[in-house]
Image (cartoon, rainbow, N blue to C red; front, side, top):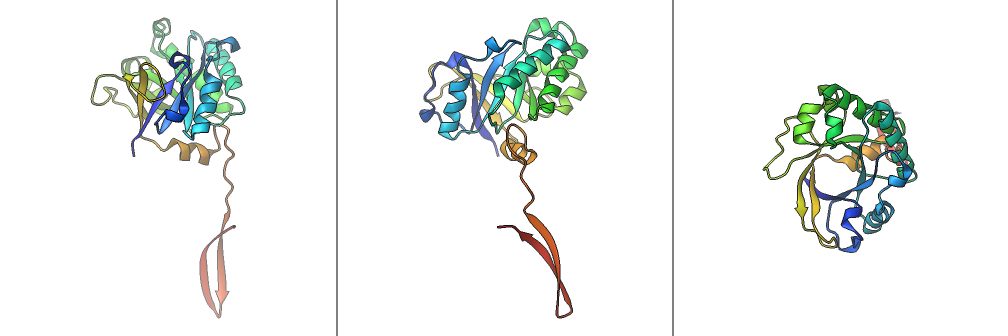
Length: 229
């Protein structure tokens, strides 16, 4: 099943979430490695999606040029996300040319530093990059280790040949309740189920309320599963 969503940041201004029609929303939580770089509309957008009943995830825009800077970005991102629940992954947004200039292995090491910190904090972590840079500036390990959200515009499908769970297909969408252009996305994975079952992103891991039983009645064995009610 394809789910159609959007991603937003402070650049979309004050969104009227009661008018937004989307299956999911990915919200920018912030950028860089200082708490002052929290997205100015993050709290408003988060509460807006919750009030509208729209499942959401988040992303953090990176400027890190070392593993240490990436870990500092992760620490601030985690602080911003604390106490909230996200049905979709938390993505690391890597787009800066100064980062790509470091080469594939260094870029991949920086990505690993950020995403491993997110995972250690209990978040379902993913990577957002354009198809070209994802193909040429990340190792096979990174591409296979983390869920991918790929950006690729003006094509029928992404040119990226690896696996991906989400596709940012346009930056010129028109959405009710939002002034100006909005990024449009497609999602192919059931992230709400995956994340809730794993107990990630602020959700408690479900307890097993079933038990397998075997009964002997009049010399005959009967088996089945009972569910706690």
